Length: 127
Length: 389
Image (cartoon, each protein chain N blue to C red):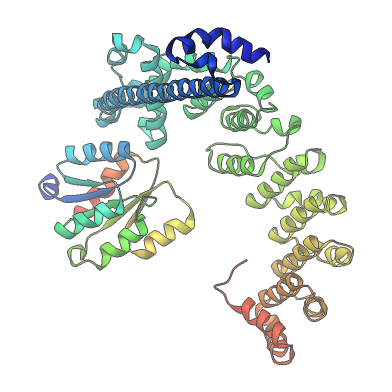
């Protein structure tokens, strides 16, 4: 039943690390999610302009515009109303986590990530 | 003129053949023709060498990119999406299809090296069960033997690569191999060896503090601090041991930072002894540490030594009194603020007064009302919670 609910959910994945992008994309796609990827904030914003997503997963340290900028711009966009955001970052300091959650992120995962943990957290938003 | 004679004997026949009047030219012109020829040949050789290097670099990049894609898919398929892990079998029972990583292509050294690099990259990107499997794969393919071989190499850069590989994959290395490297003259090797020692040593990860003769540079301290505070399962010793006995000032200074991080109040007596050291940079660190540990019992002592201290130590004492906020030294702080002509002393005295909160609210207001315009600006600046220093 839960699989049916999860099918065709659109996820936008933003990370400048191509390995992370490729592997998480495969993990999520395998679970039936439709994943779009961007390697920087600028490309991500272009995708957000043309498509509505059900979940945003973003890194913090990225070229052009960082994750915090992406989140604050995303939050103001009409396409983003009520869309949950997961931050995945190697910046695990208390300040970064606090800032991420304050700015509107719904969850914060530290790198290196555990694929199973990511899946559980993603599923939680679609239940 | 021997160079000219040699050049003439080498290139003379060529010039005589192709430059009809070469012999009739004055010597200066002959030299100019010769130098022009040399310049043209050098330029051609230099450009050809650059082109060759770039071409080779491009080919190596293309080859590495291709093999990395192949390796990424292989590792993802067999480790990340390992059927046994996904079905929740205990890690010790999980099977890795080693045959996939032992195909003929892996006999080539550069492919093995690419596999090591990718495993390290995967290992730094993914944690949990997968991370254990990356390490297991590294060991079962005997890739650690290659890394150990690198550590034994004469080349320092190769040694560093070997150390980084073993540290990244969490492979234990005997103390006798790493310890000598922690005092290497080469800064990079020394730094990597220290990181490796802390991460990998099973017995006493801080043993190299005892024998460190080379200084711990600030950047090394940052790296080590990160490693010490993020490595799981590390037994944290009482750093007072090195604060008391180490003759290496950078080790003492670094231990003071660790004492603050781990809030080791038991180290306070050892730190207090540092107040008598002749090195005032070390004294600054000691006062800073006492302040951050809120060692109120040394407040009187700090006030006693205040007037004999250099400016840096005085500023640190003012900060420490602000951190203690006992309320016993309000008059001292007020006097320093009013009497001192040094901007930093005034600013830190004001800041420490304000840090006392309610205890000094009236005094601060009175100072604002009665102080000179410049002093009032300093007070108002220090009262702004958004300004931190």
